[in-house]
Length: 48
Image (cartoon, rainbow, N blue to C red; front, top):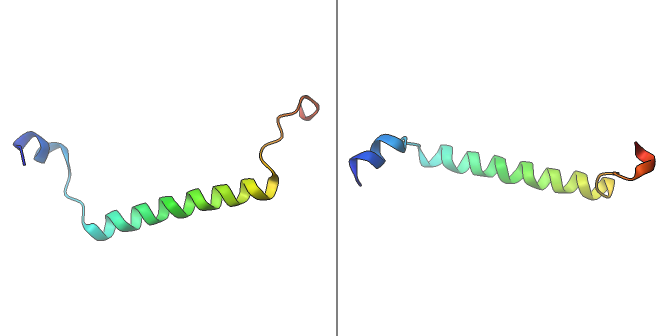
């Protein structure tokens, strides 16, 4: 690994990496679930 890349990329444990991506996936799934319940955002002219 080049020296410049070692300086830029911090050392992250594999467990933290997996937890971070699991949390991001769960947040995205929750966002899609909430949008499916509300049938999307109401941006019709009558709403404003």
